[in-house]
Image (tube, rainbow, N blue to C red; front, side, top):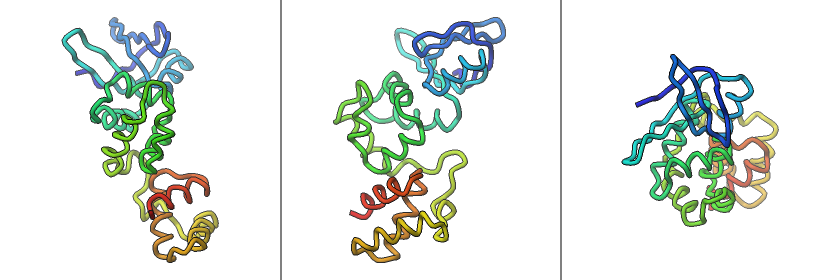
Length: 195
């Protein structure tokens, strides 16, 4: 199996890059992030998933091991193949995808062309509890500091809705660990996790 390619970009068209390395050209269907990086630099390195079927071998490329990992989790869901997985990661960044799954945002996932509501629901159902910490993200306890003004504002806003401080702090920790960046994302995720 091919897991990594580093080389020169020979041709790029419609999300597919032809990368030459060692005198051999590999055609790789890339996520939008890896495609943009290869085109910008005239080549480079990508992490590859090799799909073997009866009718041939296909290569799918990613900008980082973390992006490849979330792709692997996506295609583990029934009804999501490599082509759909690459389409999802070309429409949504890996970080945003993890946040949408963790917060149960079926509507946001359904906005991806070709991804229906039922498949989006299945992705959320099957992956919501499986998405652990990826890459350089910090575990829940480290990702949260009660001292930051934004986190404190989120906790106070949630307490204003009748939740206890302990519940609010825990919910905000989970939101931050899931990738929430703005106070609005933090509160929205926290509310969903508290229901």
